[in-house]
Length: 142
Image (tube, rainbow, N blue to C red; front, side):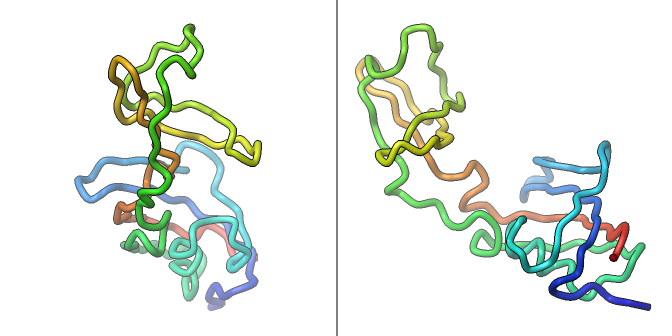
């Protein structure tokens, strides 16, 4: 039976959970996720976790932050004047906004604190710094 290896195109179903069991993503209600192992379309540890799997096989992998979205980077957290945010936006902790980087590229940020004068925003990926668990089923190996 053929086993998945780097360079193979695969289709997988997965469910991703945090340490406390909270589900953060799943493909089970949709079509399987299709990717070529080693091309970097998905987080490194996830792609590596499919290597050696056979069609129809299921397994659970646990990834440290360095194998997933990386460690939280303090330099990606900043404070902006509250009046720099358009008035029509109702600010609250957890709100996700799209802003432009200094280079003009769009970036996703999360509001982590709001006070009378400043808004703290975090440009780290929401899952940065968190260990992740994935239940993976290899649906198809091309």
